[in-house]
Length: 163
Image 1 (cartoon, rainbow, N blue to C red):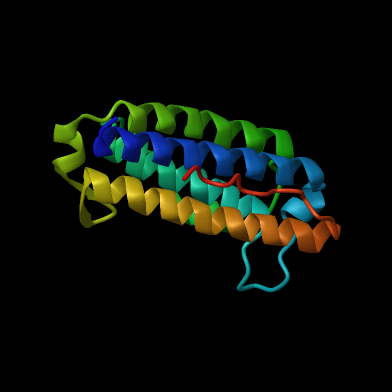
Image 2 (cartoon, rainbow, N blue to C red):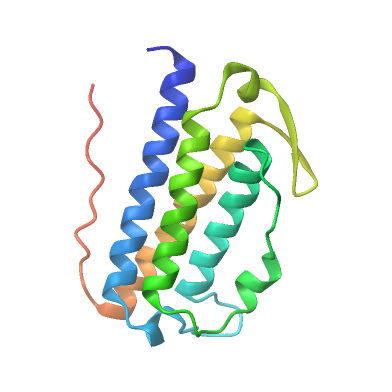
């Protein structure tokens, strides 16, 4: 295995693992909890899920994969309910399945190429790492919010890496 293959395989695995964790969280929350905001400056879990799906679609599926950019970023944060847990989970899962396929199919040329996404310039490698980091940060917020809203230990432990 070379470094390129290791990078894209690991990134896709991390995105899948966090998607699974978010799904567990959505399964433990009521629709009211999913859309609850503590203050005007906080995002509900539902908003974070919409934001992750939009961000991944824009950076990976559109930016790296060449599909049209259909993102409506402001709507991700303005939505205040009306989307049930199952619908959110299906939207995120569909997006992440497509995105993981794009990441795993990247060639050396695509990883080294420069892309324009969100008025930013990034290499394919940078885009993959940026999205993976961003996704992990918001997944952590969703996990934290779920623990606070349910009072439960979610049992989400990262497996130890092999040495």
